[in-house]
Length: 379
Image (tube, rainbow, N blue to C red):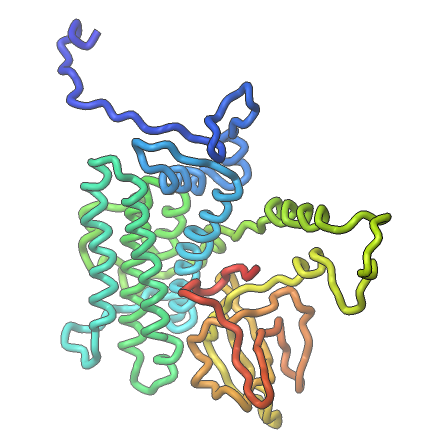
């Protein structure tokens, strides 16, 4: 038919692999087919599109399970992209009165090495994405963008605008740091727009951009965001998914290991002090980044902390003043019990509890390995 229409023959035909359920090919007869419409109803079309592209190396088979889907969603979208967007926008709101800050003049008197490194990371992703798409390496292209997103989070930890803001005469440096982070976030949002158009449109609007679609030519330009434009809070772009199904499976396995009621054993049916699996899972633990810390008047052991939990900020009161100074705590990523009933200590409201380990006179805060940022679930 192509020859009859005098249409040139294709130079190549690309065939992707199979989607498997675990290690088994999807089949109606086996009943292991995943209905994409059900997944979209549960998690949203943008997230589903992203996960399909990120999980399959085109040309090879790929395994799909809902458990793996949820883990990837929480890791890439909720913890990384969503968390970084919230951090950048929340700090611009906090320190710049909901207005996009201005970059510093070229002759500003402070070290810009961190900003240059971050911008280079974003531009590496922008430069490499085109050739990767041409060679059908879609999974690697979005992986590079997510690497740049994580770099923004690392940059914020190193630059610590919340600490800079307390230093007299640091307004230009704080503004430049937040502007650089926002510009790199704009580039990442532009690169991910073809994959997640609705969510990235919402992010671009939150950054004060009037154009719904990104201009690809501007992704390599620094200074596109307009200083003084009003930013907004888009809410949780990717609300974290609580893995109830996974937990339920773990719970049933634990129940299967219990001895039968009529089985004789030297172990009592109920040992004092033991708790059930359900009781453990009732405690919600998340990572939090300490934004501010100060002593409470008249309380030698108490500190008041303002922490970022990813999707919200909270105030905690902790009895750690004898072991940590306020300056040591700012920027640390700690573990917090988030579903503890609020209480008042010395008249100061506390909305959670941080975790710490002690031995004798030594006390150390509980942290997590690696750079997860705020809002990661601890299990």
